[in-house]
Length: 100
Length: 287
Image (cartoon, rainbow over all chains, first blue to last red; front, side, top):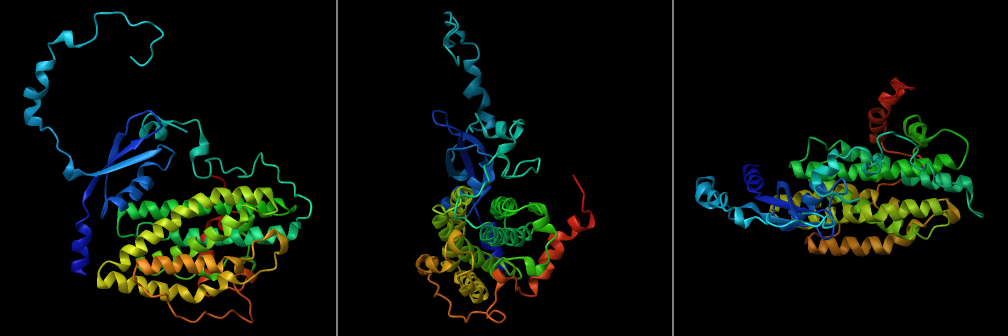
């Protein structure tokens, strides 16, 4: 039995991204464990689209995601705070343009 | 229904339709024209819907008993989803049976019938085994039921056609889920192969009964006609799982009578005791 337990504990973590309707982006909704990507897709379908949330699912192994680290927060993100000219705030948006 | 993200769907509170069977427990056929078309015999239709509904109800109960007992949290939710799909099918079919004649409604059919009045095949009621047995049973059940429902989409009763059309999508996923796991267990360790093979041996005695033609006449799909498709799918899945098709003799009925005739195994009484005890203790209970 110990052998089987070892195999089960080895299921890797997957991150799940769901697209709720055509035209929108896939959005990260959570994570789950599965033996491989095929199983992860089915688990994602059961865990994250039970209430009609999705039309498309992506799964990716958590270990395959490269992420910025909290230690790099300042060098990564702080320099953008004072560069107001990077924000499109110097012209008026017409009223009939949505989603801005 | 679309939502901008998954959590809106959870918090959005006005639309009960996205719940598996509504939160109000109203008649699932409310608003649907349930008049019988010409040439459809009410008694035959009721009997037939009762059989298919009882299959779903009892199988759903056996799957619900797996809750908190599955090896992984993710499988827990998967099996609960399948159980809920089948419960939804049971409600629709029992309601259809109830609507064909003035008499007791869906709830009464589920909770106040005695064992010999239940029409489910014995495959659904037998004692749960281990995970290998669960996958074997689900594979057999969903393959058989999907084949039946696919043919029912051309049935004489339009309500039954609609119920079948909804069920086909659900059952396709159930079969896919079970087949995936069968291939995985078959191709896994020596232990997982052994458990799947043992599970198939355990359910195989109840396979023959699935294809015995009933007495529901023109409203039904003759189950004998789906044997070929069933054998084809099972052969294909088990070949991929590298497990031989079991050669286990069928468990005989009693005087040629099976689950569809109200003759059940000793396990059925225990299922019903659990399923019906609350409703029977509080017959007019509402919560």
